[in-house]
Length: 338
Image 1: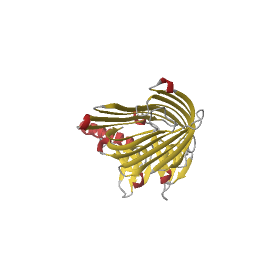
Image 2: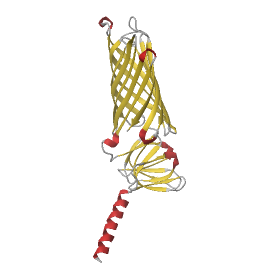
Image 3: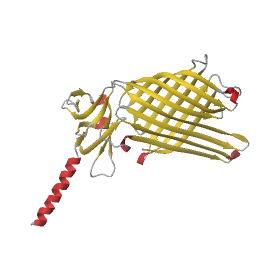
Image 4: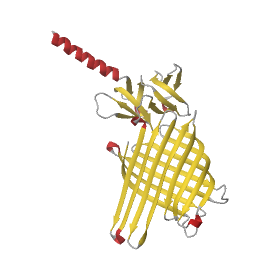
């Protein structure tokens, strides 16, 4: 009798623990239901963790018929509003957001563009990726390598990110070609779609005889489009530019303005596209302007691996003597992301 009682008690504790941990429920458009803990939603993909699976489930947001959570989230709406609270689907297909203060707001499902669990630990708020490329050709013993990497952290109202990219090319009877760029940026998110930013970047390029360009930027921007399929933002401000060249007589320091815009398309299955262009009109160097252009295409593979192709283009209408006005790199790589 005691054995039966203890067995029943253990089963009760196990089931109760499972039910307690599975606080959120999601119903698909085919009426299947999954119960667990919703971790968040980003770029049109919702992630939910269950007790009976080693890996988290990922579900297209548009494939969800209804959702109800006890987990609290930082929720971003397409018009830039931000809420802290949980969400519940209504009979008419709308979603009710109940804030931690008890206030409620009703929105359409496609208006919710981002959700992040308020209870996430440090590592859950991190994102990172790294990819490599390598080319070897017998002719002239050509060897090329490329590396691109980034690490980011996103909190409730701010985010910080850093990156490092490198390209190197060696071949017989030709001078080595290399270019490296790195940077770190901080962004604070205001209400609606506005944000402020502060960043520092470092760049070197043998094609433009540039040993090191240090650039600090301060500005503000806004999201023109922010949905579950695409985001597009624009920012502007001022920057301080310090340049060191192979010939010290060519060294420069100047103040510039900047305008940049970024477009990211990610609701295309396993394919995503990102492009960014930045223009730097000279302020203390009248008539000078520079531009940086990036375009990347990424295809997701299983287990968080991916392949990527991208082009980077730099232009300066007033290069130093003997240097090229422009330079570009086309790179392919295989990588992994967190």
